[in-house]
Length: 425
Image (cartoon, rainbow, N blue to C red; front, side):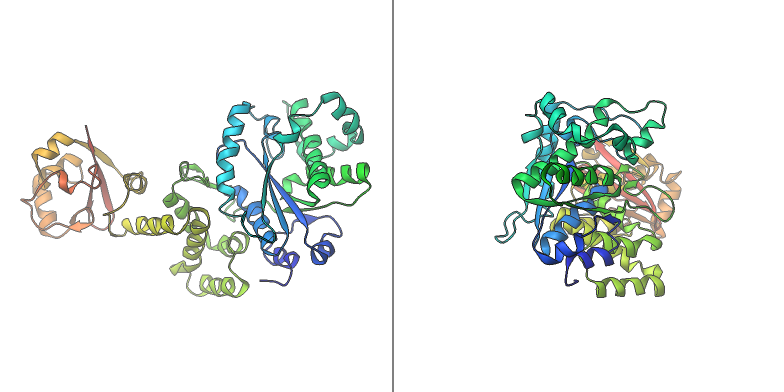
């Protein structure tokens, strides 16, 4: 760990842009800093991890962290980084989303530490009470339309045929007012966010200067890109969420495990709390023993532990070994379904299995072999597995007792030819 947080953020590649003077301020005293998280879904996703973990780093260096839930701004919609207008959510849905996000934030920020506990604040507490005329008179007069149109988030949308609604155009004013409110009532002098937020954040810095005659500061982090040109935060099944209800810990682990060699060291710096020496050692393995993928395994372990905890990491590690012949027993039904989501499958009624079905008949029923003769030969040659256990008796009869969690039979022919039998009814 570096001696100060500015240097820590710098060597990790987190400083994309910042307001002059922020380095000296962070070195001089503990600073109150906030980062906003709009509640447009009931979970944060891996794209939120850079600002969220950076906020945690600032807290670890003794600064005062505020996570701002956007219960108010989510009703408007941030145009930053969006090609089209967001679908507006109801207040009830936003409140439900905020409650879910609150639970996730506790995985990263320490709300219990005595010296500098993190704070969770919802901007609905003041934004929903604003009087429109007073707001336009007192705050809106400090923004020219020319100034707002020059911001990248607005300018990009104006170039498109659909343009931008007045609703989203006003988002910058509300975010700026958030900074002013937190400056006044929480002593907050620093706002952070992704680089696509630079226009909104610096507008808040300017509002504080104009209305309070005081200095405020900003840091923005880089938006993550992948070396192969594909979008970070997406997997074959879509967005990678922090909620286990949306993305299982197994899928979450696999997302990080599949990191490209060209990206893995950058991700270790951006997303983990590993120190420079540990990351340097892992970087050496990428160069000297890339086939072992030690850096990817460590990245996947660190991230799954941070987001989901030790028990879910252990389950994800077990699940990750299954396709290499690992033990299936003890896995939850959801995990089995997840692991074998992409392999061929068939159904077998519970009644049929309770009556008993010969392994040869089951292999033919599943389509894993084309005939009973092929089934018997494959078993005799030691090439057939049930629940990752090799079978040696072609006369064996299976019952419900062999079904994993009473729901699945996993057949395998050879090393990698899997088939999932689902017990139904």
